[in-house]
Amino acid sequence: MKKIWLLGFGFFSISLGWSLYNGFVPFFLDNYLTSTALIGFLMTIDNYFALFLQPYIGNRSDRTNTRYGRRMPYLLIGIPIAALFFGLIPFHTSLLTLIIFMVCMNLSMAIFRSPTIALMPDITPETERTKANGIINFMGGCGGILAFSAGSLLFDIEESLPFLAVSAMFLIALLIVFNKIKENRDAIPYTILTTPKINYKVELNAPTIFLLAAIFFWFMAIQGMEALFTLYGINELSLSKSASAFSLAFFSLSFVLSAIPSGLLGAKYGKKKMILIGIIGLFFVFFLLNWVETVFFLRTLLLLGGMFWASININSYPYIVSFGSEHSFGTRTGLYYLVSSLAAIISPPILGLLIDLFGFGILFNATAGSMLFALACMLKVKTPSNTQNRKYNNKTGL
View 1 (cartoon, rainbow, N blue to C red):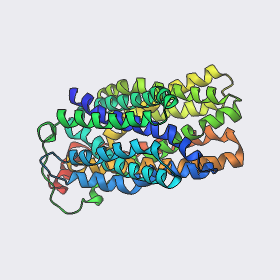
View 2 (view 1 turned 30 degrees about the vertical axis):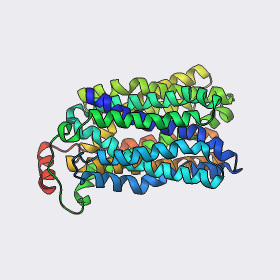
View 3 (view 1 turned 45 degrees about the vertical axis):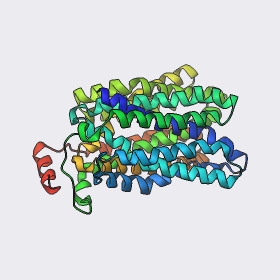
């Protein structure tokens, strides 16, 4: 587990960077643009890149073979470039230079995001992966909290300071991961895959397809809820902007605190069982949020929601890689991010349209319905037996 905590610095830096980027870059765009829709589109560039680049980069890293390992070359290339352009963002001189820095930063982040996450199953036995995923998500959550706390203080002093601090953190995280994790020493032994193309017919087996569908539907619910919750709080519950945003922090904090326990429970009782408990629990949380009348009840439900979301999120990534071999960890990581990014792109506008048609009261009815679709898909997921895994390995040449 020591190496997982060290790898967690990579995930910590990714989450720190994205949280700071999402929190403060809109202020720069607002200086040039009057359209909130256009600002929102530019802020989702990373999701569009993820649709196409994450599966490709993840698959490419599966078949990379260097003296540094399979994943490390992508970190060595992507992280320094990301640090450079992240640090340049506050020094833009026009809308054009700002967009150029944003695009270059997003492209470089796409180079190392999937390989960084794929390192976890590379160096962790299958029975320990839910624990490991809990640890790296805990560190990622701490990165997000640090971005909004210390980042806000630095931004008030000088707008460039938090961006320069994150750039430095990228490089520090790279040094830690590169020096402490040696893939050729620490990774679980694997056979070099020499076939030119991965067999997607084998990879996209029935359990994987149903699991990807479930992932899509629960991210539809979560991404839409997080994007529109503050507006819901203002318009439906008559909360102030600060009170509405602070209420959502209960969900995030609960997720962070529940990350490691969810991983431990997943290892003990099974990943699928914990995911199902999380889906059912989150369905009831969303359903009950329709009847909230007090801030105390609202925040209590959000605390419970964060716990159930951790039960789903911490166990789902290890679950999807468990359906493949060590040759497909990067590919499956890319597919995971493809589906979650697609949900992030689709959910806010669809839920926004429903709100325009039916009012803010529809928000949690829609998210609860999306969780029911996720539940239906998860019930179709059958964990392969040892015999099926052996057949899979034979097909992939193991």
